[in-house]
Image (cartoon, rainbow, N blue to C red):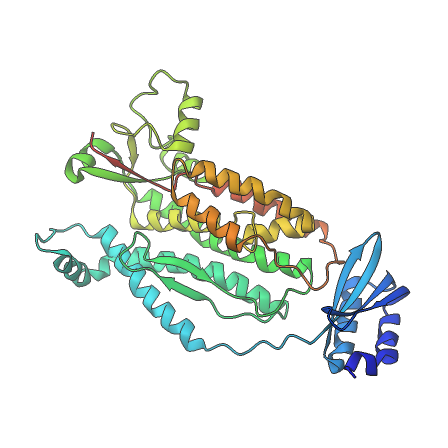
Length: 404
């Protein structure tokens, strides 16, 4: 005999203290739930959930709060969440490798000395001897990632959700030196409010660090014509624009950059719309910022924020969408995938993101209590976060131009 059947009168009594029960459906042996109680809560949903969850712990039962057909539903599920402890040494080792990797990436970007004529190993050794030149970029990008992930972590701890420390992902010999970082919730969020707070805390904290770094970096970045750079390097990798990044360059330098030599007979609006979404025409002869390492780190922070705020699945933007619309958020996924597929025609990296979201991002993090709604303040913040996604999203993150 299971604990529910053995203790059904006591369990039902616990439920009667928080709900006016109208009907009960018991689960069959092959079903995942023990019982459904339908009716109407007689207490505030947050208070009711906390009281019932605590009361059911001795019976090793987890309650789920749902709404169906205008009624409140309490679903009893066998078992309680018992997260296994994590090994913090994994987080520490990954962080140290990422620290070295991002500083090396900064050295690749910042080094301004003679390039040895030998092979790749000789070039790597030169960069290692000048590793200090990568410190401004490396520490800046790490500060942004740390703020983002600890925004999630600290808010999860505030809501008493079990969560891992951040896992940083090193990516040596790459433009940024890292693939970012992530934390993992070990148990579902309690309700939409806690999911909202945990989800939005990361990007908002990351932006609070990235934006000052970006503006300081742009102030240190001279505006030059692109052609002299091309003649020296034989090509150029240009960072993409978001609405916010365009505005930041305008605020600091007083012009939309890269400022073209001519609009090619097009109106400025049409020119910028085409350039924004395709990266063409190539901005040869244009004036643009020669990015300081801090500006490069700040721009990378905007890119990381934009990627995390894609409103799909268990990305931060997916959380914001879910807390606003519940299961209706799933209807947005096809439009996200189609949009990324179309953008992939201009920047193929979006096809990889579309595939990852299709395979891994179709499910949202569903809270245990789905009866508790967002308060107006949290609704406004969730909407603001989705607006921020539009402002920082970069349709063409990086574009390689070769030749003249």
